[in-house]
Length: 639
Figure 1 (cartoon, helix red, strand yellow):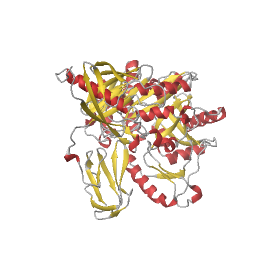
Figure 2: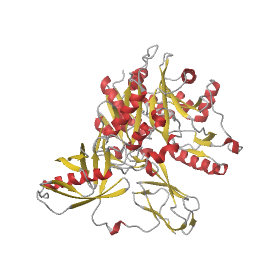
Figure 3: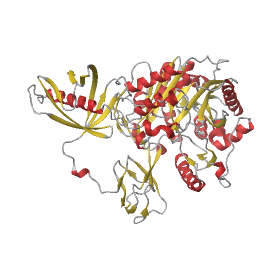
Figure 4: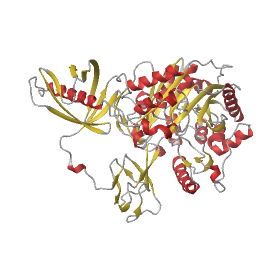
């Protein structure tokens, strides 16, 4: 029996495992980097062990330090979570070699699936359907488009889509470099890139007594940068024959390598309806909650059960209903999915949905790790109800802090292609991103008025409010890509605001503003953190949907001249590390508009910095390996 368990991970998955441990009566041990010293998973563990340093390579990827921490804390088991060392056969063997229980598959099963090329060889021998690889040396126009893919790792790292043969050598080189940096293995392979394909996976669970469960399908087709954004179970619209094929192939794959524990077999389903093996993840998936919701299971508890040597029931329970999960990221989809950092002042969801989060109110989102803040999961008897429930919950969530993808998630869930399950494929965001991220200016001025009135009420409590007729007050806010100047008078006769005919102030309290607009009352909750003002309101009914929350920036009356920069300056869009500079690039070179100059790595992603216009590279202070703060000067291109 496992009595004390260490989670060799951080954030959301560490908290998820700890939650099950508390229910099972198992003591918990956390490990943490210096950047995570005050993190939620550290605060919630019974015991915590420091891993000196900030970078994953110095902390969460140091298997020998984690084994040492487990022994020092008196743990008798290790759960790897997902990512980091979760699919590292050497780490699994080291855990077992130290006399600890490894909550995962046997090391040789991990090793068999660790390389996607090796995994495909094994699956071919087992009769699992595969997509034929393409030799880059003999590729022709007829083979396009192609996908260059890292043989090790996952999460979209080391992947490039190639639409022209002239781009293939550069894509191979870039993918190899990224894979080597991310996984310590630069091996890549090339296969056809399927346009309009669906990403379907099957959850499996196997014990040491020969029982293999296949727990239905999940659709994970909505992806950005080859990373999943929205997942659901069961995968909608699959013919029964195809479901049977997927279940059978997944069970066959598990038995072929003597699998034990939780795992996922992933498939690509092209428009022709055939299924091809992609890879097997020998760990718990990020999206496992949707399977838990429809089967009424706790997969982490079952992982513990299997690791303790106990048998599964002969058959799993029957599924019920539909579940949808959305990943809430601290990122700006309209700016190339740029990760965001800062203080998360508040994260609150309405009742009725499940929230699996790695952060709590007041936590800091740093540059060191993945930008996922939380997963929001909704279950309902039907898909239509589950999708509507999740969209409504996200719309009414209170999310105060860095920019997030919340509005993108709401719009995606309500897009006809997704809501009606007619456009579920990996090209969803390629087709729809521009429309889904278009700034919605309609109604923003009303939020600005609410912010100004709340600010006036706050000042009135300290002698700044005059309950007599006076000159107009002026406030300016930036929101939805525009600036909104609010001019109003607030006195004994109520509200008089320029440009707001038919708007009446119906209530004013600390942080609460009630406006009557065209005879309809609407409530606004206003919270200010420095210059950032978060205004939440129930979504307006009727007509085109508009956001129920706005983030405004209070603008100073007089701009700071020191904020100006030299024309053509390329500033770091986020804190990060300069991982490489374009080969041969030097000051004085002529560059073209859009030409890649250098790459920053932040939050497990590479971000390409390109020339904004044709001109001369007059300054290049960036250096490979150097860490930079947001706003740091990287280069200057002079027209």
